Amino acid sequence: MKDNYEGKNKHSLFNGQTTFSLSRRTFLTGAGSAVVLSACEDSSSTLNNNNDAGVDIDGDLDVVNDIEDVQDVTDITDGDLDADADADGGEEIPRPPTTVSEMVVGVLEEVEQLEDLRHQYGKTQKVAGEPYLERDDINASAKSDGSVYNLNSLAYFAQLTDVHIVDEESPARAIHSPFSAASAWRPQEPYSPHLLDAAMKTINSFIPARAHDFVAFTGDITDNHLFTELNTFLNVVEGNLVDPDSGLDDDPLPPGEPDPHDPFQAQGLDSQIDWYSCLGNHDYWALGSVSDSMIANPTSDSATIYLSDYVIPTCFEEPPCIDTWCYSDLPDRCNMPVNDDFYTESYTPPDPNREYVSLNDWMGYFVDSDVQMPAGHGYEQENIDSSFSYWYKENVVPNYPVSLVSLDTTTNNSGVNKADGSIDSAQLSWLDERLTYLEGNNQIIIIMSHHPSDEAGSNSEQLQAVLNSHPNVVLHIVGHGHKNKVYPRPAPEGEDISCGYWELQSPSLLDWPQQMRFLEIVDLGDGTGAVYTTMVDLDIQPGELAEAGRFYGLLYVQEGASYPNGRGAEMDRNTALRFAWPDSLLSVLGNLPQRDVESLHFLP
Image (tube, rainbow, N blue to C red; front, side, top):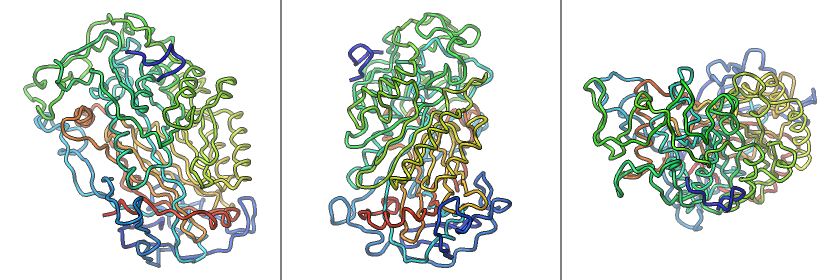
């Protein structure tokens, strides 16, 4: 890996019982209104009394049985409600596709397949997209004042998670591990930088119509918290020259052939888009699950004994066959081994840049990253000085009172399995204090962490309780599970409905379906809001190296070796999630500048 830096201190709406489809000309609303005069602690306010039986905390809609059916149909796409004055102020600018209009899916079903179909493994096709499904699991419609909708976009951003930039050649791996077969080794690993760059290109392609307010990376941006991996991540995002090789300068294919190991110029994220990051277990622990001392020294020349071997960059002349059943020769690609049995050599060409990155050094590299803003991407010198990685930022959207709070659910883990989440009491106290402060400044609050709140260790319930106690919290975005999942977090029984919020988990960029999620927080103008969530496939053109990364990602699922059902259920993908505003924010919302709802432009 070539180091581009000077030394190592700088790198260059919504019924819960039934789901409905949104089209550009139809918007379904929930009936009912209530007068709510107080915040979460006021027993005289409109309360949530559905927690005993009505709300299924895992997000299943069919058990939400205490919410009235949707009654009113309101057109929100005519005139000012779906303002079509795009960036040019005139005709509508065509948007790139999202999965609302079309989806990339397997030619074969995305499950383990029979071996005689191996010639179809990894092949994809485009099919019709999925509409938004409206959800009101937390009964927010009960707080509507009945006003005609006046939609206003308050925040529009992208979430990428579990990018897993992999230094495949590192000796500090466990590619033969019987305990984590789905993630110990993957054939698409050499393409991790190319898939990330395809994501950056995809986000940039939406700029002519409207640039995202920011991008949030919710952890596991690296696979083994190595400097080579972090360096590659930063170089891709910043649009630098990227050399994916470490150790020897491997060149298994001649120049001009589709070799993922060759240096390439990254497109990077457009410099006008801010980005933020939080820490994942793979960004702090060896293999994301054990202490560093349990695995081979990553700068050494010998792979982890018994558990690993040297992953030699290899490209066969022809697609491999297993028991006479061969893979397709399309797309044109590096024909790689398709299981870890191929690798049997322990000796690894050493590379000093493969060193583990400590927490303080990790945050330091982000503080030094200044191609896009903000400097530090959430981290500040205070984090380094005090060795803690949680942070908050006010006003992350210009002209709108939106704050981002990032949690550390990783470094406090004292258990055996370091992949598990954990959050300590000190951080919970810090969180409670910061949320109180932000509410005093009338901020709309987004929480980000790597682990879902259910997986935050012994303090999981306390974390949810803190978030429920602050009605300005509307959204918590997470990763870790490599899947799509929507978790309603309704207000505790007896508390104001505005104390409910939504938690969203998104899939890995490396593992199938290799998607990211666009999110938009919208004020509906009736005392409630909605979070539009839109799944987005990577814009990968024929012949691009990322095309092979997509092929291998799906192939590995169809071989029965990778994470199943990363897409999740349909109700976890393209959604419109209704929530209630606290009364303290209503006057603030009424005085904000008006912005078109970008998500509605994705509708066919």
